[in-house]
Amino acid sequence: MIGTRIRDFLTRLPLVRRQLKSRWKKTMRQQIAASAGAKDAFTLIYRTNYWGNDESASGNGSSLASTETLRLELAGLLQRLAIRSMLDAPCGDFNWMRTVPFPEGFHYIGGDIVDDLVAGCRARHGAADREFIVLDLTRDAHPPTDLWFCRDGLIHLSNADILGALTRFVESGARYCLLTHYHAVEENTDITTGLTRHTNLMLPPFGLPPPREQLPDRPVGEAARELGLWTRADIAQALGL
Ligand SMILES: C[S@@+](CC[C@H](N)C(=O)[O-])C[C@H]1O[C@@H](n2cnc3c(N)ncnc32)[C@H](O)[C@@H]1O
Image 1: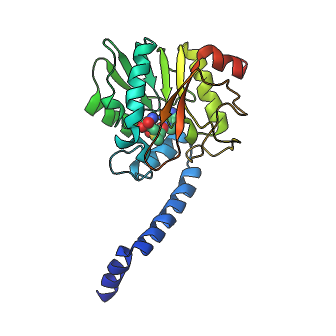
Image 2 (image 1 turned 30 degrees about the vertical axis):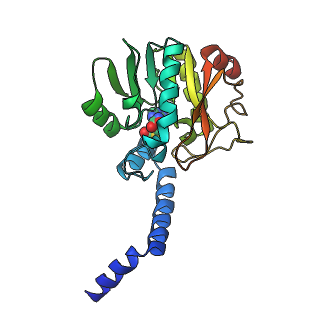
């Protein structure tokens, strides 16, 4: 009884809480890296709320506050480029995208590798012009749309998986892609799919040309990045496809 009280007291101390959280994160990173595959890794992340945000299962960068600038910029770009359909993959929990005003007659497809996440999106947000599908964007054929939107997705994939995703985009026939891109990163490193690092898509092993347009993405308390716009021909040429 006294032991339980002392333990309860200690776990409420900020320093002890921080240490426990850091130990939990380390154990989780090991489990994610040892997962049988991408679906297992991201399902574990989702079920444990590993990215630790109360508003969005997709993490701090996916809150409404973190996407304030981006939401306006994206709505403007969809109008300007006359985009009629979009594959948003990964769509995560659709927390902020649900507030983006899509143009009249627009068809939205959200795709994610986590079954539970897609089922939840379908139940809460599904409509005739708003579909949610289970999709491994690195291996499965992308449904043909005008634009592949990929925010905070490639940063969690190994370099081989990123190249797989870019290849699927080229095969899909979509006109454009908008991809998270960190222009300030000076050298790309590789990771096990499921972990996180920032990628500069203009550097090896990707070697994309400079983006045709960049939308600023400024999540609260995180490194600034852009969503770079490329055409299918830009990506095909860079990858030699
Ligand atoms: C940080 S969230 C970003 C979600 C969303 N783009 C946003 O801005 O809120 C990353 C998502 O990528 C999904 N994911 C990871 N690998 C994937 C893959 N190969 N195919 C589809 N989704 C994947 C995860 O399940 C997770 O929901």
